[in-house]
Length: 169
Image 1: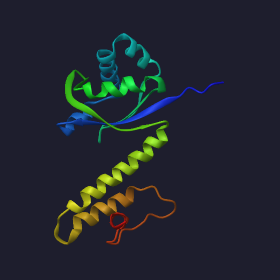
Image 2: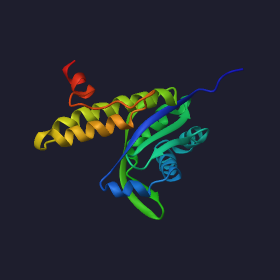
Image 3: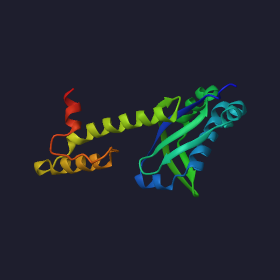
């Protein structure tokens, strides 16, 4: 028996108003991607990409989307993404574009990349936190550590964080 191979695309939905993200749903994103592929590659591309294409995950708070599609239509789907300029959801046109961050063979590899991407973004943002006595930075680091999955007890933050150690390396 032959295994069916799929690819997973991790995309970031960029909108001008962050409140517009809350209007998105997975059917609207899938429809926008399908229509973009049909516009760019015609009936052949639309038929090839419609088989086993789905939106596996959509986070409306940060705009991350996992798209699953057959390995054979990777180029069709990937080349049509820049032509998505708006998504129609709940009767409203939401101006946006999709930024492709990663292409993986499994959801797990995309999730690992997303964790690395988010930590890099935090490392980039944390030095910009300016407050008297670094209280804002300390509070953000403590909240991040509270969200991390741990075994046993929760780690505590005591001023020197693992984020600062990673910056030195």
